[in-house]
Length: 412
Image 1 (cartoon, rainbow, N blue to C red):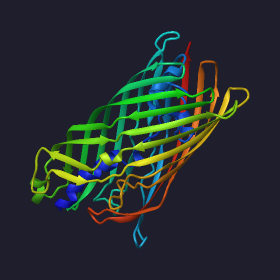
Image 2 (image 1 turned 90 degrees about the vertical axis):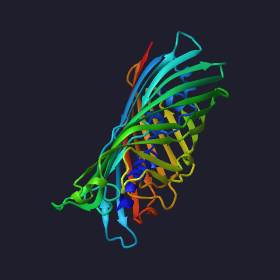
Image 3 (image 1 turned 135 degrees about the horizontal axis):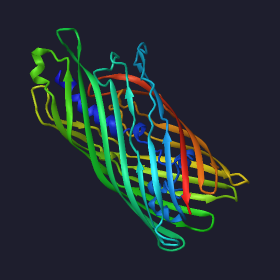
Image 4 (image 1 turned 180 degrees about the vertical axis):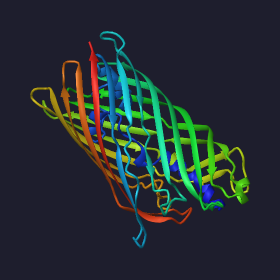
């Protein structure tokens, strides 16, 4: 019984923050349509996220807003029999991004801006009575990053930029406990909390010549501190109620550093190619610890091994501007490996290596106003996993359809 409860904390935060399937690379719609590439070419004010140095290339003050409709679909099949098939509930999540930025003054080498974006945030919900309910029933996560930014054009070819990051987030996690009260109701646990952290975002942008650009971006690790989360229990049998008392907890969660390099190549007047590589330091997530305010014989502080591995994501995309200059089309793809090792896969985190196919259209409505429409399709490998902490085994397969829309407005 104690083992079942100790899993609550370790499973909650591994799924909440660190799966490749839960890290959102949706901070710019034009970039998303090109496979998520965006380090080398500053298309719009969303460069505040992708490479702060690119902000010096935005000649007018620009306001940018975007939203996605993220629709993941996950299926569990019991292993090795395959007789138990469960689908997670179909839900839609709506991450958003807002940016404003531009030159400090006319022809100034200094540009400033502010980004408000959602780099992590999704969830999964299984039926309350499904096979794996003692591991997870539902998870919901929302995060928002605030990033004031400044960039400086050193020469005609080189710019640098930096942003300070303040992050906030909240979560809700529920699971069943293998206990039944006098009315035949199964016990439940719910963990909720809010966290915050700080970090930074650095960038260099280089124009090698009229046709080739390079970019380097480093986003620091952000340690999200949960100073007062809450664990609540319901339907606990009276015989063990003293062991499952509502209590607070503290924890610290490392969001990994990301180093990105990219190149943009203007092949001809209309066609541009972009490639990026992202190195993500998932290995920082080695152990997860919880300090509960009130310990009991069934609830000790938790120190759970996670042992994530670092990953390299590869991205490529093309951008074609049509002859009238009002329409443009984008296509892209990416390969995104999973940081989750064998022995740590479960229904809270059904993560696997993924391939992305993306496309989009942009339309210049007027000299100042533009719109971008995007669709992303994510398909992961079918992965069989065993959680060594509890012996739960199964096959998982996740697909995601993700349309998005962005609007930009330039001030003269």
